[in-house]
Amino acid sequence: PLSRLPSTRPHPALRIPAAIMVISYKPEDHQLLCVGKDYSSVMGDRKSLLQLAADGATTAPSATVTKIPIESNFSANTVAIAADLFKALDEMPLPGVVACASGRRARIVVAAWVAARKGGNADEAVAHLESIGNGGSEVAHWVHGAVAANTVAKTNPLVFRQLFEKESSTYSYLLADSVEREAIIIDPVDLTVDRDVAVVANVVTNDGKAGLKLTKGLNTHCHADHITGTAGLKDKVPGFKSHIAAASGAKADVHMQPGDRISFGKRFVQVIPTPGHTDGCVSFVLDDRSVVFTGDALLIKGCGRTDFQQ
Image 1 (cartoon, one colour):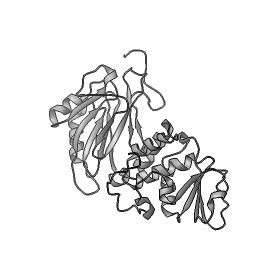
Image 2: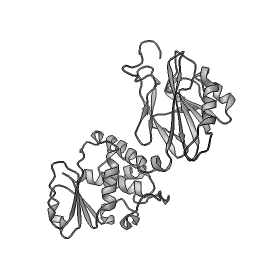
Image 3: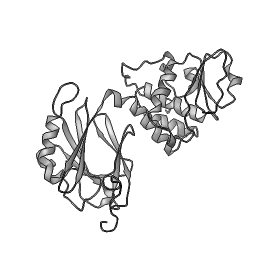
Image 4: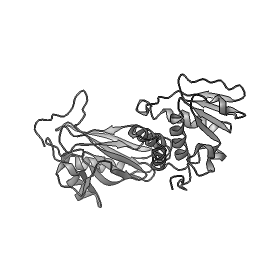
């Protein structure tokens, strides 16, 4: 059921308020009320108020008051602000009130907070918000990013290497879960297969260990100016699989669809279609929404040409 949360043990650095041990997305089960601007009628003897509206009142004489303004359009809110919001919710004396103009922002923030503090299942939080009419693509994007940034991005930090092939002026990207040590590479080039294998073997993570397990090669599109390195990597790396969008019409071990999540350890990138340079172009969005890998769909001060390769 949507009110259930995973039993995954949260990171020990996260302080879990006693109220959140109630396994529910309902604010009232955490001694919280999510309300609109007329919050004063429900304050009563409640001990705290978190105000999310920039123009919202903060009159609560007997309560601890915190104000962290966010936009009602969640596409205008950064994922980074979630850390402040979650910290405020962690520290609120209970029972408390979370207020905005209509209560919608409050319910979204509380659902994301519950998901983050109970193991990081953003899908369930988004499904709950959809079920109560508070969903939408921009909400889902923010909730997923906020939850990942405050869970797996902290417990399983990202290994990131930008690699360059000068003949075709191609950037490749090596990503890995530094704890699980599984790695993927985006847009490898055939001329640099040996270099890429060496980089994977010599990466040293925070625990002092060297070497990663490279499992997947992701292509943003079928390239016209160079040959992908996935075939060469398959020859050198046992179990390695090539990936490309099904819409590209190209051959690969795995044909990706829009919305697919390509995992590496406990991290993942999500496939989003970005046609233009080619009909089959896709981009890869990191789980915490901190970065997107666009291939040639979006370049530095430009974009890939659209007139010759379909």
